Length: 258
Image (tube, rainbow, N blue to C red; front, side):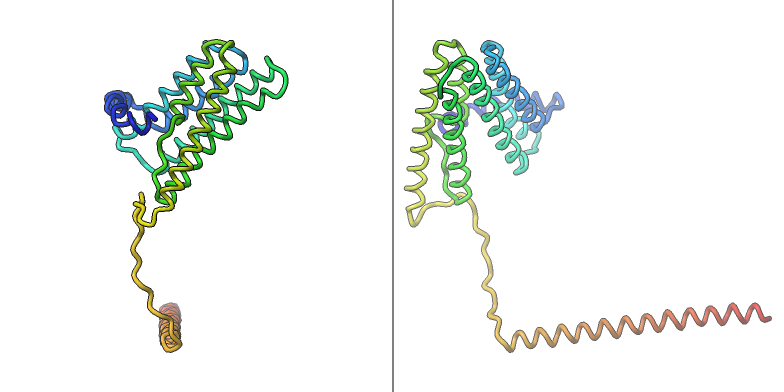
């Protein structure tokens, strides 16, 4: 939702911060990597039941994720490699955080409740995969109730108290599932349109000539002729080198004899 409706507003407000971080000598990859470290710390804090510390580290993770893009724009280092690195670290951070949730539930609760964070993680990955696959096919697949920013906010709300922790996780699972279903439905409809707009440009290719038997024979004859020419030139150079070597040897013998 934030990525769709409020992206331009967020970008305008974060541009000055991105420029300040660029002047401080930081890079987008540095922010992305340290954001992953703070996510790992938040996961450990969640697993240990240290919810106030986990909230602080979760906010720090979100800040890194928020400002690495503006920093890359300010430094002029936006690239496919950076986008790939950011996407991979986001998925890894999601896995770490929900792994910490599973660890906490395994310690504090009995039964099958520990499967709840794994269900959330599965649906989260489905949402991300739907967008990646749709965009690879030229279909826009953004939007929905529970994109990554909203999921982090709701997880932070769950960490406010152990009393609401599990109920908020169920809400997170339900809303993320609705996001996956809605994204699938929109992509399905868009893919069914015969005149759907595509996001990527298709490279135009010139028609290839037909490979007839006569054309193949001509190319074979030309290749053989080139090979013979190269072979003759190589033999000529070798003969010239031998003659020059014999000439130098004869000169040395003549000087020694005199």
